[in-house]
Length: 114
Image (tube, rainbow, N blue to C red; front, side, top):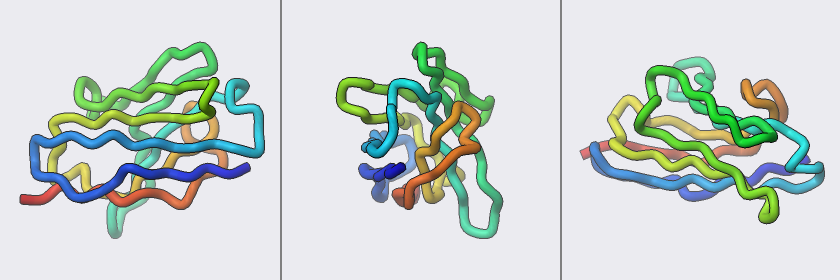
């Protein structure tokens, strides 16, 4: 299993970023997928999940601002993040399973700061 995230960076509050996660080594379309983040000094926080059928799930903290999607043909998972806040600053990982409990990649850093 290999998951490689990209697309992170530094953005001002209110800005947007789109994260990508390239998957390999397993049948991507057969697994629910998720994004999980971890801020410095805090535990992991699940921020979105998508089922094999495309149903999406979000916690209240990001609902309406983040959108998870998947392209099974490209074996790629996405996270569109809008209206970013400083508290969204974290290392973002993609993970197998809708609840993010499976294998994770190395992560991509997102920093929201003015």
